[in-house]
Image: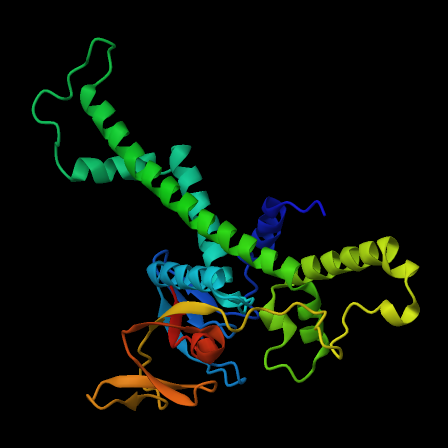
Length: 315
């Protein structure tokens, strides 16, 4: 299947950077964003449908930190994590704004204002820097121009860093979509699933999943299944001794960091008076205390709900 990741990112960029103000109310001053809604429904503890409407100031640094946590969770978890819709909308919009800002600087639209800032900081080169050099150009102007390029290079490097994380995040998700196509189809058909498929995947990932599954089933049918008896043509049989649908490895061991959530009623106190969460290992019939700020190694199925509720992060 010839689908380029850059095409997917381009589609994401076109669809999400043009924010629909009738759905999500954003206001921005360039440094912070006011979002009149709750944080990402998909990866928050509001998975039961209790979404609070609140006005919160979300800075770019907070968005980047949340993006890094989503990236680490996705890479370390055996299952496909819920897609952070609101977060990706804000990140992609800020990337578009930063690209336009960098383009304006590189084309000299903001050079006058930057020169005023540079001159306002004082004469950094000392006496005689405004004299012409052997090429007839002022050395002071050269220093200012070179100084103006440094912030531009730093902004470009930081922007590429964010784009790398987003590409890695999407590649990891696409790899899991390829691997668990039948499992995702089963989730889509199961109306009793705790999370709808449209919250688990983005719109672009839904299209990719449907096309990939269609091509895969067509390949299986043309190559093998049509030559077999009808009773053996099912590829999603779960009634036998062997489940034909590949599911995530729920028993995989993962490293987790326990995060404190303010005003959390599920927090307990251990014998030392420290706040902790309690989980049960059913195989051993044992209750384990997970202290806030601690790092543990446990099977994913035991701490899965803590990760989905953002009370624990995979590391």
